[in-house]
Length: 248
Image 1: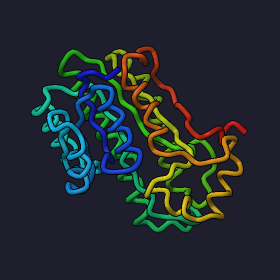
Image 2: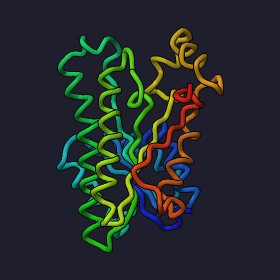
Image 3: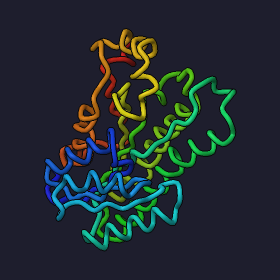
């Protein structure tokens, strides 16, 4: 489905990002893996075909680092066909009104500005060639419903969904599709505070029709679809992958 497509994946050193990277490689893609720590990226890249994987350390909340990321990607592979905005942070667990200013700034920097900077860089690149391509934003069900104790995170994920829909409208004429994926609870280091806490985990699982949480690989299929030509008429969508949590 993705043969020879060049895909940039942020937050690719573990969890959902790593799972998406592996799924994309299986479908024939060439990858540019991005994360803040080079050593963690190198670990993932070392398990992938060397000729199809480039690891570039990048803080996506810094516009100059994003520009460098895209320059290195084009230098290596000649073009970029899609991007998965997955890098995220959630430094505060507690009431929204008690969120420290530093945590607000950090969450917005990574979860909103980082996604925007990458989407902007991809758009400029796509328009400089023949146009077209796919932007996939990893949002969250926390952006669709109230997010108790994760309020600032939920706010940024709601912003990601709004960004997705606006960009889909504005970039359609450039043949750039923009979609989002809203996962439910996934077993990752990122979500360890919930998954590893029986009371919190059961609170989510007991309200989920499938009666369990997800593994990272279960989110990857939606990303592969949205990056592929099979989704050629899909834009502005939010695909919810949550075991039915938000259906009840």
